[in-house]
Amino acid sequence: MTAFLCAIIAALFSDPAGGGGDTTRMDGLVLEALRSNPEIEAARDQIDVMEGKSGREGVLPPPELIFMREGMPAFRYRDAMFSRVELMQLIPFPTKLATRRDIASFGVEHAHHDNDEKVLDVVRRLKSSYAELWFIQQSIALAVRNGTLLSQTLAVVRARFAAGGAGAEDVLRASLECARNDNSLIGLRARERAMKAVIMSMAGRQARDTLGCAVLPEPRAPVLPPDTLVARALTVRPAIAHDALSVEETRRMLAGARQEYIPDLRIGLQYMTAPMTGFNGWTVTAGITIPFAPWAVGAAGAKVEESEAGVRRAEAALEASRTSLRAEVTGLADRAASEAAQADNYSNSIVPKAEEALRGALGGYRSGRGDLLPLLDAYRMVNEVTLDALMLRMELAQTTASLEQAVGVMDLSALH
Image (tube, rainbow, N blue to C red):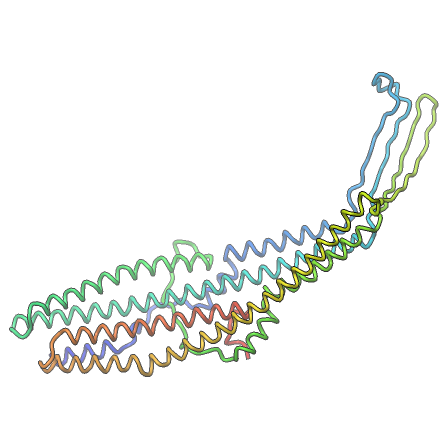
């Protein structure tokens, strides 16, 4: 009996997942996602779309070719008095074409920022799911270990019951504890399969593939202070660069709107024949648009006012994004520091105290002074605080992943 109880103590206070086995590293999954994630591929394709669209802007519109037969008596084609072939070309003011090219180039830059933001989002979700998979696998290992220990404990209780040293209620409590653990294990294995499917989907793996054991580093708080992280985020976060570029884009659109007051040129070259008189000759035409005509100037003015409002809106959106990002980064950094401190407290204080209480209950049960109920309570307490510690490490990893996305990097540990 004494040897068995010592074995229980040694097993309870060991690493839940300390059995080794195949592992799947987070950095490898990130590389797979960068190569094969469908969302990232779609964002990259959008860059090509915007580059193609940009190539169509800032060029002259297509010319217009016109053929006319004039003076046809009773629509008799051969009896027409004149025949004309005319080539017309609208030539916008040169600065208008340059402005349109600039505005189109902003779309390409936006697509690059959207792609970078999508990469950060996918990596954050992948790391968060990976941390949850780690927690599930650790919980499975803990449940498997507990199942073995509870089965052994049930055997001891039954032996004591047969010898008259324990009541029937002790056998029932031990059996119930075994059944609850088995039920928990069924749910955990289902969660593991579902989470593996989610991770493989984000990594771009086939459904027939599989994953090994997840591995998390030791918990630690961000090395850099929140103010430094905020300054870094305001510099490199793609979403902020996107909004800052929107301000420049709307200012360029305002410049384009003001150019609507500038006339455009229209030129044409016409060749005319008069079969009835035998005349053949060329005609050159030229004209300009009149955007400042009373019935047209209002539309140009409204476009300018709309563009001015767009600039103000873009500037306000940029400031709102910066303010929101400051709060987000500061809050995540503080949360990560808090979770790291709590994880350290669990490791150095809470879990050891729960283990000490379990040792006392085991000692009492071994000596015959105690009964099963305090032992099960102590066991549940160790199991509960162990799960709490594991969950805290998972939450710290997820908070760190969110902080990395907020700052605009894929690895905070690389910052100095």
